[in-house]
Image 1 (cartoon, helix red, strand yellow):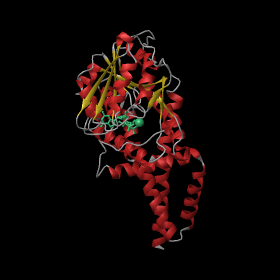
Image 2 (cartoon, rainbow, N blue to C red):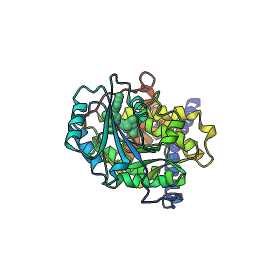
Image 3 (cartoon, rainbow, N blue to C red):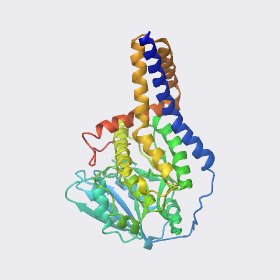
Length: 376
Ligand code: GDD
Ligand code: MN
């Protein structure tokens, strides 16, 4: 009798945890979509605004992709005299620097400097080094494996800075090739809507290394990029939003990102590790957040740090009940498992798995200096 009651309570608990796990993000998504996605920006954007800009390209063993990256930068229609490019290399051993020097010899007209570190200490450390040499009022960070949507991308991104209230700008992302089981694509559709709507509401706490633009003066104010965590882009943008400046993902800027063909799961876990580190580090600053930013920050923190564990707990409870031949638990589990044929559901569950793996992995390595994944 008592064990039947405990089983029912456990079933209720398992069911509730799963219910919370799915309804919180879904409600947040629908709220953002209905309430904010179609709103005006409330930003005075001047498409003709042309500040002095420094583009920083961090490199570690990028010999295979660096030419294409520099070509992509060179086709930007931004005035040459206002544009400076800094390539900061951390002891690459595949001839990256030689490739850059060769490219510079072939292409004149672009102001480009190569900085070399003799020891590799990670991307953020290198960015801070480059920052000391940057002469632009605006600083753009861009990864080598990222292609910008068009030759207007840089102009479009910078035009937002005509409004002094804008502190940081990033792109929306489009995967270049499909990751394992077309998960990457579905993941992006959902998150682009979330990032855009959060930005319209005020700011988004998640930025992209493919194109992250910052007001240099604000970067200096916060002491540069954080070197104790991996998410240099997202954390820096969040710090700027916490200071009262908008940090936005804009819909007129698209980045196309290469997805690794091998080691896709490791790659997703490492990036999830960086996001988890970012949200943990942000916890201490939550109290100081502008009122309009607090709900976004709280929900995103919960979604990254707590929500995945609710799903895991629910599954474990149901598995336990299944082992005791509890019929409703079996039905519930089978139903849940069969939903995996739906792509959005599969994508969602995969992301939760990466976040859980990331939190665990963070306990022994923070991946500040990470293994390079081959991308085609
Ligand atoms: N100078 C320097 N030193 N550059 C580095 C180092 C380093 O130690 N490690 C990586 N890089 C460069 C790479 O050459 C590339 O241009 C860029 O930093 C990003 O590295 P990827 O290996 O392509 O990283 P990712 O695509 O998995 O991760 C990116 O996105 C994450 C989430 O948006 C990075 O931007 C991460 O910082 C970011 O958290
Ligand atoms: Mn990358």
